[in-house]
Image (cartoon, rainbow, N blue to C red; front, top):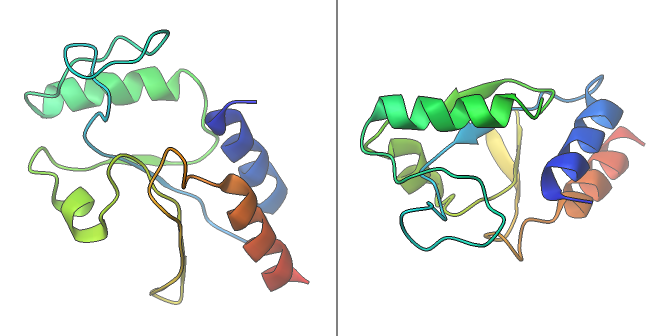
Length: 120
């Protein structure tokens, strides 16, 4: 199961007790840069329009939660150290779970475990 599918299951399971949000940041593996085989055809974002087109591709896969977009200066990415991808849990304005950086540190199961303990 892919990461997005895992995330969607997490959203479905815990949406009654948690708000979920995806912040789309700079493309980690653009097709005109360090790309993987079988990856989406998304070029390096040269402007906010490029980033919005990439978000449209994500939205077609129905992430089941709101998606917001980091500005082209990557302000959120730099403040949160999110590149290439990272999971957070924020409770009452404080980060209570900070996952390791992806792809290896993108562990949906850790978020699921935290939320399970929190809601028990």
